[in-house]
Length: 300
Figure (cartoon, rainbow, N blue to C red):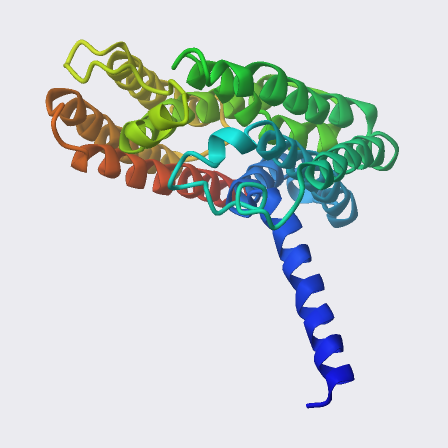
């Protein structure tokens, strides 16, 4: 290989690496969940009249807003991420991108996504998507450094994607998207608290208080986890009661909810082990995509 070809290959590799770093800023796994739940909300709102063009526009705009918001979150938390084992290799702590690059990327992406949703879908959808940015960055992100109650606050923007999807399909709101919102809100509490339990020491090293230090049965975070899971089992029956999901959905939602509750109860009684926290997390990762899938299939 001659020197000119080597330079070209090095530049191409560098460009690919930077593109990959920008993509990583958007937290692709979290973003994928946002898009799946947005699509579920859209389908529940549009049903048999499913408009692929509008759905695609809604997903594109939501991806931009959510991805930009997550990139701005990494910009804000870059110093804290550098102290944690699980996040020290992210683009900013690892030095693959400069903070100003992440800031500009995040701001441009959020604004482009909100403007696109406003004009290509409808203003209601843009406003709901924008509220995710405001709540996630303005409330949840700073609260992580002060109180584990941030999980409750963070569950609000985390539960809005299906509402975005419904608004994109209907250009209005109704009871159904708020039932989806409630299911996602309640689901996030055992999910995020189990993760916080697993990485409690790592978060503490970075100065983030995502879990009370007390691991006893009376730990308030355990109480919230158990209470949220109990309410989730009950609240998860509403789609069937209201007629927009069937009995198959109901059986899946109840079974998985009860299993998650059993693990949450065991977790509260075993303060010296994290095995049950892993079980709660794994069941929660199955719960949401499966109940949404079955809910959509019931509507076909």
